[in-house]
Amino acid sequence: MSSHPHAFLDLISDDLKLVEAKMQAPNEVFQPLAGAIDLLLKSGGKRLRPATAMLVGKFFPNIDKERLVSLAAAIETLHTATLVHDDLVDGSLMRRGHPTLNATWSTGATVLAGDFVFARAAYFAAETDNVRVMRIFAQTLMTICEGELRQLYDLRNWDQPKEAYFRRIYGKTAALFAAATESAAVLGTDDEAVISAMRDYGYNLGMAFQIMDDILDFVGDEVVLGKPVGSDLRQGTVTLPVFHYLQAHPEAIQIMRAAGRGNGADEALNQLIRDIGRSPAIEATREDALAFVAAAKDALRIMPDNIYRQALADLADYVVRRSM
Image (cartoon, rainbow, N blue to C red; front, side):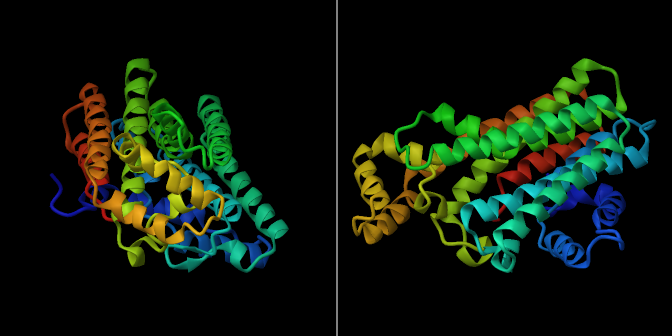
């Protein structure tokens, strides 16, 4: 187990600096756009997606370092672009304590900025000079867009099956983790069993990551999260804790339906969010996340037992220990 939450990043700290530098907006970019890109990068997360690509790349000593850095930059830039459009679609004015782009820019300008960042991500993917990686990148972008559309169409569909949730979070989160690890393996080897295993690792890691996000939406610190507790439920999104809670308390669906109709159910909804956060549904959801973590670690068994395999295992453990 890691001695501290980010110990697995120590092995690739210099590599991540190269990725960070690559993602910076070039001088010739329209200045307001360049400033927006830099702000987006500064308000970014822990860089776990590019970290997985770099760690998988470490298994292959003959891998071209510049192409791997381009891949990692493509993955994180694509993630950043999706956040721009997500915030616009959701009407979010803050992310991680920073104003979103759409909080200060017009809708049209925000869409165009997000499109520009998508294009930069595709450009970085093309720098790998690997058609298969570019195909994975394009498929992942389609999957992400489809996942977001599924979420929009499933809003306030309170009795949807559990499988609909898993399909949605694959598109929302796990597809990009899977693309990072699969693409890194594609750059390093022709062994299809290894490539498949690395995709499985990324997929399961991403699923656990999003499930943990959905737990934190009910039990996390609002200051740390940068948004109100229960935000997803307030917006009409059914997540796994809600699904588990409804199995034991089917009558709660009436509160959700009333809130969706605006029938003065705010306090009832607030109480429901508190009840879910204190209920066995949270532990049941955590068990689901742990099952995905176990599957991610199992996928690593095909790889050499070295510090990089341990780092990827530690990363999987960290995903369910984090507080934000």
